[in-house]
Amino acid sequence: MPEATVPQTTMPQATVIERSTLTCPHCGFAADETMPLDACQFFYECRGCGAMLRPKPGDCCVFCSWGTVPCPPIQLQRAVGAATQCCGPPASA
Ligand SMILES: [Zn+2]
Image (cartoon, rainbow, N blue to C red):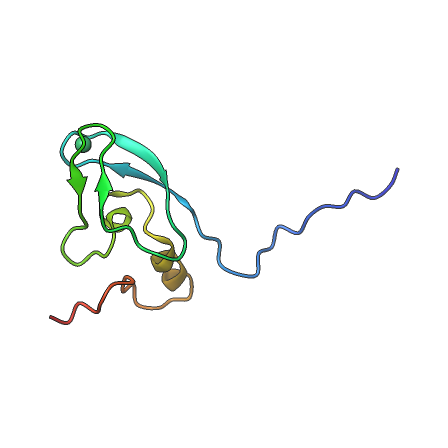
């Protein structure tokens, strides 16, 4: 029996979860969404009630505020132990 070629599961970079479940604060509708890996999503239209969701103050994207998983940039920063400043402008104001 030939050796099975098992793909290496060890990834060179931190594992980033691309899927996040966004829960609408207005109607409670939860939608499983795929996050962009290199950008933040500032607006999200609820599939349940059509409300335009925005990040909470201090958050840069709707996934950080309303999702079960923060956005990929935050995940990467946490993976390397950096401050969890989101990809938006520094909250120094
Ligand atoms: Zn809604």
